[in-house]
Image (tube, rainbow, N blue to C red; front, side, top):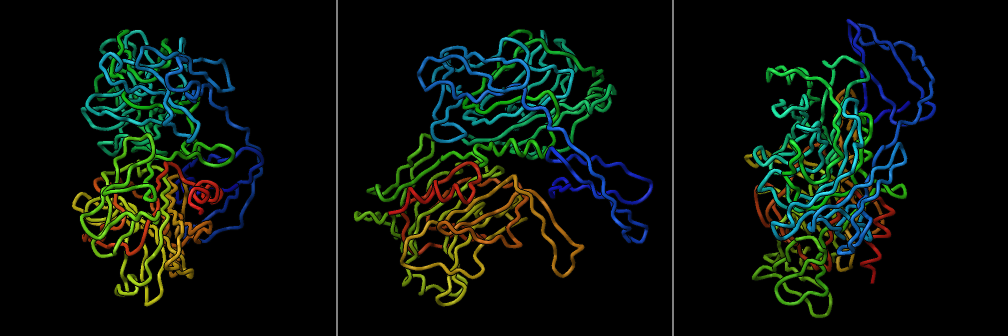
Amino acid sequence: MTSSAAETHVVDGSPYTEHHVIPSQAGTQVLVVEARDDRGRLGPPAEFTFKVTPPQGATGRWRFDDGAPGSGVTVAKDTATEGIRHDATLYTAGADWSAMARRGEEDRSLWLDGATPAEQTAYAATGEPVLNTKDSFTLSTWVNLTDASSSRTVLSIPGSQAQAFALYYSAADRRWVFSHAVDDSATAAVVRSEAEGTDPTLNVWTHLAAAFDTHGDTDTANDTIQLYVNGRPQGTPVKLAASAASQNATYQPWTATGGLQFGRSVIQGEGGQYFRGLIDESAVWQRSLTPGEIRGEVQLAQDDAPANELVAQWDATTATGTEIAQGTPYPVPAMKLSATGAVLDDAGNGLILDGTSGYAAAQGPVVDESGSFTVSARVRLNGQALAGKPVGYRGQVAGQSSGLESSWALWVVKWADGLYTWQFTRTATDAAGNVTRNAAISPAGDLAEVDTWVDVTGVFDAQEAWKQIDPLDPAQTEQGIGKLHLFIGVSEVLSGPRAGFGAVQQGSGELGIGRGATGGTTGHYFPGDLQQLRVWVGAMTANQVLHQVLPATTP
């Protein structure tokens, strides 16, 4: 039996400590056990072969691809295959479908973002309960929040007086929350599992999941709730009984009688906290999913590949004047050119940058960077201008600022005269702007060609596990979730020892072409030309880079 870095379990020392090892795949598995004495010496391994039954699938799944915008379709089909189906009905004039959807082109999502107050009480709901809230369950959904001025409920399961569970954005706490009312009364105490970060980025896709776990027994002292954001558990599981007792309340599991609500809360029969934005790919299970299963759900696999959605595109070959228009339906601004050093070429060569003062910039970010994303630029290095730069020079092709650093960036690096390579980086900083973590990937031997067009694509896979071993001391290892990949054209760069990035970092402010920040200094001007910059939510595979990135840019 194999286990990812995030699922490694160690049994160590005395007295005996029990660890639960949950296989990540069904079928025949082999558990290898080795005894270790007090001096750290391992005994001969023992193998135990056993079979794992496939876990129960989702008992409800709503893809929200049932209608086109303005079609008048008011039913979202439940497409799960386990149990009884519970279709959801869209309510009020403000509920519609959107072409901005998590699975990309031709997909749809639930649109709850009307322009007028009368349209801002829209929601969807099933007619009957979809879960037994006394037993373990999991909720999963993609959201795109557009307004954080008030609390916004994504999913809720109401009783007659209280909500058994609710997944929502709290305006008071400025964070995502998963909550549970300990009984169905108007004065019920509420226990919460909260996101570790505040002020979630607006107008970007974020994955939320929440699990209620009874641990398969009748001891309510073990019952927990856990919130996940983009596949990452937020803190440790919250014990319901202990948290209720701290509020002088008593916790007892109870069964909610209301249907699943998409986009609103229901307390004492009254709707409120209406969601503003998009909801997509919602699902429920009548069991608590493992962290590995939740990461798998975040990948949103289709045809054995993770789904992606183009959320920003700047095509300089069709632009004129002093800005490059943004070409997707998402509310992302145009790139405005600097006063000097940047011009748009009428011959279709795109944006020409002098490598000294030229750049283009827009207000970012365009993705939730704690999740997976892909960025690609079609660029051409100016060999003469780069030859005049000093050894060690780094020019930023494109990147998202985080203040004194670039949260993510594509670079060209001059290692020696005539020796240039492409590079993709991620950098985490603390509140003071000090670097706390960085990761980079670049070719070990392949040189960046000058005066020729090339597509440079960086991928951050927030769900990919990695393990780094110190070659001088193999006992010193580091492991985590989140890894960088780099493609030069169709060729993937071999992953190096610095490609793992387990930090949670969100950029803000300038999203720039042709300049960036590193080491506390803004500049690092790119000497060359750019035809197109695109950003997707989701981590592309090599095959997807070949079929989605390159065809659009091949002359």
